[in-house]
Image (cartoon, rainbow, N blue to C red; front, side):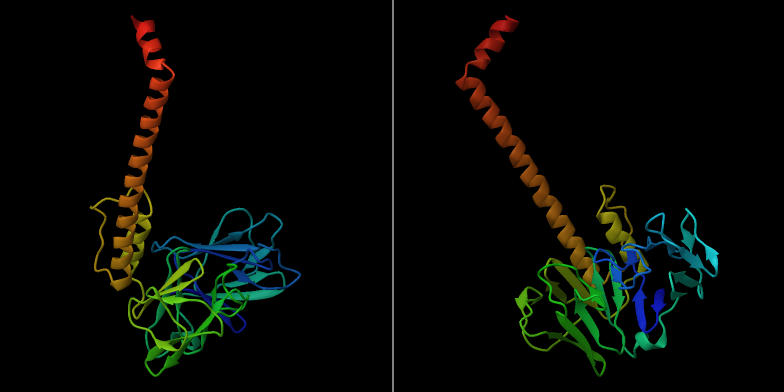
Length: 273
């Protein structure tokens, strides 16, 4: 998976948008005065092409390999050096050794279309700007939880007083994660998988979030996480259609009662007689 590297910080570029800036609205917040609140947007649509970078504001200055960006998004290539203000980033198509680890481990935030690779270092989840998984929600503590390696396993460690769920159950102590586990923090669900999400599964999940989804969409060999998401999407759509049908029927019923109560039916019949 492609990564952006800034000093000792690394951000995986999963499906979706990574915003960089000094403000709280930035996904990757770097508190420096020479960065705008929203300075750059790095976008990846899950296709086979490389991610693109563009200015988040017309006054943002971004240079790629010394060339000043103008209006069009710039497609990144491995080894590209990106300069924003006085800060240098590097784009790589593969994770650096410090984050690849010896075993597999991934977190997927389906709500924001983000994928995080878990390395040998401790992974932090919270609303603090330096968190590996940044969740800017009022219910989330500055550091809400940590993920640490225990041999080949990965353990979830909630911080003191942090409210969180694991597969729907409250978790308060160190717990070993299993493939397909769902970690609920605030309004976000993070899916843990031991294998990197396959491209076809990501494309299928993206298609399911649009009205163009049909049974003809190829699903390929989906993992535990993708199969569970597919079931949940189908269930939500069934409930949405049922609620919409009931609401329409209720409105029609109310309209008929009002028409009968105020004699509108007789008035209409007399008008057309």
